[in-house]
Image (cartoon, rainbow, N blue to C red; front, side):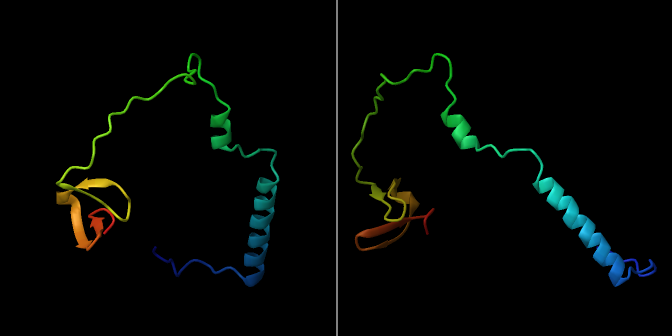
Length: 98
Protein backbone atom coordinates (compact mmCIF):
# COMPACT_ATOMS: atom_id res chain seq x y z
CA UNK A 1 0.00 0.00 0.00
CA UNK A 2 1.38 3.38 -0.95
CA UNK A 3 1.85 6.03 1.74
CA UNK A 4 1.24 9.68 0.99
CA UNK A 5 3.80 11.53 3.07
CA UNK A 6 2.40 14.94 2.10
CA UNK A 7 -0.93 14.49 3.89
CA UNK A 8 -1.27 16.21 7.25
CA UNK A 9 -0.73 13.89 10.18
CA UNK A 10 -3.33 13.45 12.88
CA UNK A 11 -2.50 14.23 16.47
CA UNK A 12 -2.77 11.66 19.25
CA UNK A 13 -5.96 13.32 20.45
CA UNK A 14 -7.61 12.99 17.02
CA UNK A 15 -6.60 9.34 16.80
CA UNK A 16 -8.00 8.73 20.29
CA UNK A 17 -11.33 10.36 19.35
CA UNK A 18 -11.60 8.28 16.17
CA UNK A 19 -10.92 5.06 18.05
CA UNK A 20 -13.62 5.97 20.62
CA UNK A 21 -16.10 6.56 17.82
CA UNK A 22 -15.24 3.18 16.28
CA UNK A 23 -15.71 1.44 19.63
CA UNK A 24 -19.09 3.11 20.13
CA UNK A 25 -20.17 2.06 16.65
CA UNK A 26 -19.10 -1.55 17.30
CA UNK A 27 -20.95 -1.60 20.61
CA UNK A 28 -24.16 -0.39 19.01
CA UNK A 29 -23.78 -3.04 16.28
CA UNK A 30 -23.21 -5.75 18.90
CA UNK A 31 -26.33 -4.70 20.79
CA UNK A 32 -28.57 -4.75 17.76
CA UNK A 33 -31.79 -6.73 17.91
CA UNK A 34 -30.66 -9.37 15.42
CA UNK A 35 -30.47 -12.92 16.72
CA UNK A 36 -27.92 -15.38 15.39
CA UNK A 37 -29.62 -18.45 13.95
CA UNK A 38 -27.91 -21.82 14.17
CA UNK A 39 -28.33 -23.22 10.65
CA UNK A 40 -27.77 -26.83 11.71
CA UNK A 41 -30.49 -26.64 14.34
CA UNK A 42 -32.87 -25.05 11.85
CA UNK A 43 -32.12 -27.81 9.32
CA UNK A 44 -32.85 -30.56 11.87
CA UNK A 45 -36.37 -29.24 12.40
CA UNK A 46 -37.05 -28.86 8.68
CA UNK A 47 -39.32 -31.50 7.21
CA UNK A 48 -39.69 -31.94 3.48
CA UNK A 49 -43.11 -32.88 2.11
CA UNK A 50 -43.35 -36.56 1.25
CA UNK A 51 -39.90 -37.33 2.65
CA UNK A 52 -40.83 -39.98 5.24
CA UNK A 53 -37.91 -42.38 4.91
CA UNK A 54 -38.36 -44.14 8.25
CA UNK A 55 -39.36 -47.43 6.61
CA UNK A 56 -36.64 -47.39 3.96
CA UNK A 57 -33.71 -49.78 3.92
CA UNK A 58 -30.51 -49.32 2.00
CA UNK A 59 -29.41 -52.12 -0.27
CA UNK A 60 -25.63 -52.06 -0.69
CA UNK A 61 -23.57 -54.78 -2.30
CA UNK A 62 -20.47 -55.43 -0.21
CA UNK A 63 -17.42 -56.62 -2.13
CA UNK A 64 -14.52 -58.15 -0.17
CA UNK A 65 -11.08 -56.56 -0.42
CA UNK A 66 -9.34 -57.69 -3.62
CA UNK A 67 -5.75 -58.93 -3.89
CA UNK A 68 -4.62 -55.67 -5.53
CA UNK A 69 -6.12 -53.49 -2.75
CA UNK A 70 -4.95 -52.46 0.71
CA UNK A 71 -6.50 -50.81 3.75
CA UNK A 72 -4.91 -47.49 4.65
CA UNK A 73 -3.96 -47.32 8.32
CA UNK A 74 -4.49 -43.53 8.27
CA UNK A 75 -7.99 -43.11 6.84
CA UNK A 76 -9.05 -46.80 6.99
CA UNK A 77 -10.29 -46.76 3.41
CA UNK A 78 -9.71 -49.61 1.01
CA UNK A 79 -7.51 -48.28 -1.78
CA UNK A 80 -6.11 -49.67 -5.02
CA UNK A 81 -2.42 -50.64 -4.87
CA UNK A 82 -1.56 -47.71 -7.18
CA UNK A 83 -2.53 -45.36 -4.31
CA UNK A 84 0.06 -46.89 -1.95
CA UNK A 85 2.53 -44.26 -0.75
CA UNK A 86 4.49 -46.38 1.74
CA UNK A 87 4.19 -49.64 3.59
CA UNK A 88 5.82 -50.44 6.93
CA UNK A 89 5.06 -54.11 7.53
CA UNK A 90 1.37 -54.32 8.44
CA UNK A 91 0.85 -50.54 8.16
CA UNK A 92 0.08 -49.18 4.71
CA UNK A 93 -0.43 -45.48 4.00
CA UNK A 94 -2.23 -44.13 0.94
CA UNK A 95 -1.06 -41.10 -1.08
CA UNK A 96 -3.82 -38.91 0.41
CA UNK A 97 -2.69 -39.56 3.99
CA UNK A 98 1.07 -39.38 3.27
